[in-house]
Picture 1 (spheres, helix red, strand yellow):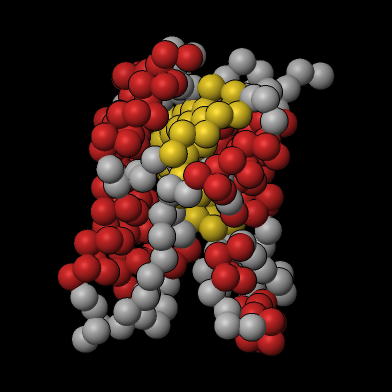
Picture 2 (cartoon, one colour; picture 1 turned 60 degrees about the vertical axis):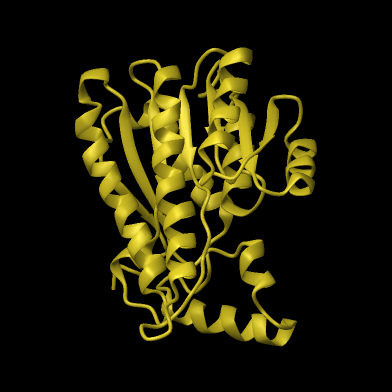
Length: 250
């Protein structure tokens, strides 16, 4: 049985760790050649070593348009096309209303929204008709979370990009879909905890809120991305697939 992404070229922003790395691995396993981006060269080097010969890393800050030009110039020179774009790069910062700073607002919107918009737009000239665009949103786009209003609003914008762009690109039959992960156990979770006891307490508290009784794994989000990248989802367009164990559904 052939691999479902054999011969495909994918660009995955923020592909060096967590959900992005899991998606990159899933795509490589299914035959795709993958370009990953990230801001930290050391993480990119480690990721490419784990992904193998069908992956290339390009250091880039998605909010920097010159960096994005560098990414797609490399792809154009090497492969000449992009079949799949996974716009995954993003950051999480929190501040409750009353303590939101201009710097936090600009940083979140620059990376999470501006960076995503131009990652997709700069890929379009290299994308054949019938290609697939996958946007990483979040279930917090439809939940109220303490201190999370600005971050959540960036993710709500992403959800609506999937709707609008699926219409904009209808003549090219390019499908645009969003994935909204819920609580996923990524390195970012452990890195935000002061110690193991605090991390364990956080994981236990979140898990109690999820009907399936646990946090998700990056690989579980990657399986959904693989579905959206493949012909298995040929009639799925403008959708938001929530991978959250039921967390935002109750």
